[in-house]
Amino acid sequence: MWRCLRGLGISEVALDDACQDVFVVVHRNLPEFRSESTLPTWLFGIARNVASNHRRAIQRKQAPVVVLDEETAGAAHEGPGPLERAQDHEAAEFVQHFMDGLDEPKRALFVLAFLEESPIPDVAAALGIPLNTAYSRLRRLREDFGRALATREARRGGPP
Image (cartoon, rainbow, N blue to C red; front, side, top):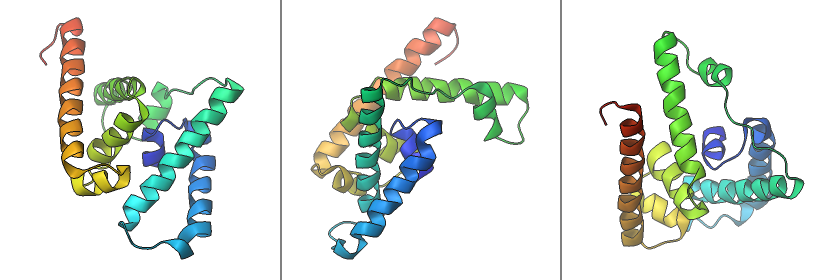
């Protein structure tokens, strides 16, 4: 749930609170769960709403968004050497920057399809969109990500 919330734009500082909020909502609404969707789809819908509420609260308070620093990003990745950690951190920053530029529906699709690797029928159900719409949006999102990656590599002078 933390990974999902982080992908939906919740800062590291607010993750514990947001995760707790998700499970409070789950506890409160579990008796009304009608199995019209899968449990993971239902949980993601709750997480998406909680993340949206947290982001709105932050905007109201005009609090700065906390970005992962090198120490935080490296702490979650044990084993590899400094070069691999730096490359992982750079890649994570790129993905986070790409996700920051997405609107909420695209961001939710990116988190579910790419980060959580959910099957597209589950993604469509979680987002409340037709299956073919999910596939076409996913195709466009892949193209956008590919262009962003190619632009980044062109700036760095490296291979795409």
